[in-house]
Length: 264
Image (cartoon, rainbow, N blue to C red; front, side, top):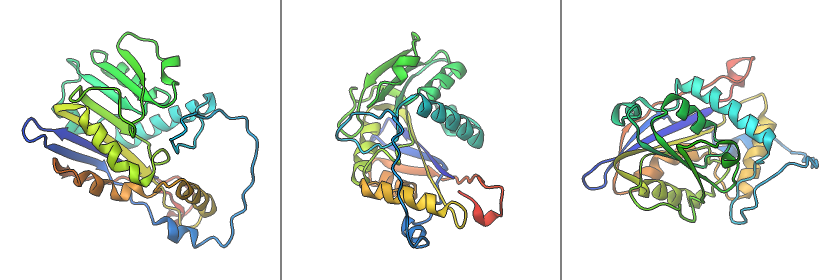
């Protein structure tokens, strides 16, 4: 599985932004993967899963307790892969120990915020999402939840937060919505603050090729780009006030078989 973390530092002059990539996903083109499958059989099962009701959103994963457990496991797997929740450049630039204001866009299950509160209890935390799942489980004084859609506009003033975190939007945004979302995340961070983006994808040469092909087809049917991590750097660079200062790549073996059967 490939993962992309981008940390943007908004400078105090010219509204500039330094971008620190901890990992840039090396996903293969979905078209080449689909070509390896001659036919895909779809089976529809009534799972009685609970989904969000935001009509304009293309996010197609559930929001129920089962999904929250999956997100929790995913969080700690990714934390282990990258050695923490924050890039080293973020930790070196912002004083989390003393206490800063933090926003998690698309806070989901709230596991990232809860983990951050455990590590940095002096910070004040805000979370926004199209589904109110975090607010139901996170009842602590230093956390505030707001309903928010990063494409429609976040419910915050310009230059509000010292640090903004946004991840796992690969199956939430249409391809044309990414530039809007990136600009919105930048808008709410203070001059001198930072934004950290995190996205990933898949590469599978032999094992699970049918599964990955179906995922890519479903994403494409909703106007999403399953290879968004490959162009995330370009999307951020399209902003006049952006300077990329670091790119770092990681990969994770998810197969017990040969290296050619991996997901990156």
